[in-house]
Length: 187
Image (cartoon, rainbow, N blue to C red; front, side):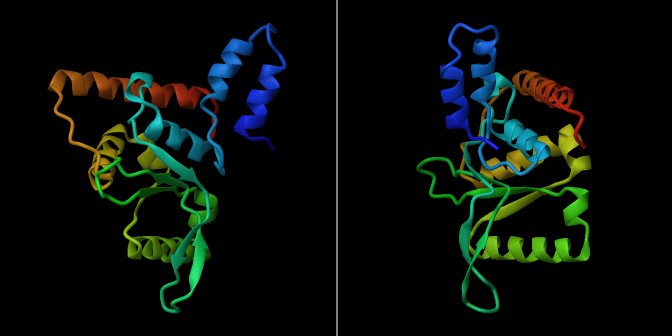
């Protein structure tokens, strides 16, 4: 329907109007390429900086075509990871992907087969794919651990923080989760 550049241009035309400052702050959070509200919420949790209650991973893309080798044929095929996280700069690591499994598309026989093929093809390229569904998305302890694993795999440096700091950060992660849930009752 729109993209971040068009939205910013539109807001530029509304200088001085009520609420424009708040809309500019919100527009800075727009994630181009998201295919669903839940993907957007997951990407925000993963990629907002720690000071904004996120996990601080760097977003590379959302649902952008990625040429991979089709296993079993040697041909190239395009795959679209929901969320592709950039490796830590200079680490030599590969990106990691996150896939949000909505019940409607991913739980059919065809959906499971398609997801398996895509995951295997990404893995053959050196890109690990982490799968999140509604229950896992809601489980803060699971999210803390899966993000820690993805951070390590993408070459992000290990954080040496006090247990008190880690506890406060976990509380901020919970707060962001709750804020995003209040932003829309999408399941």
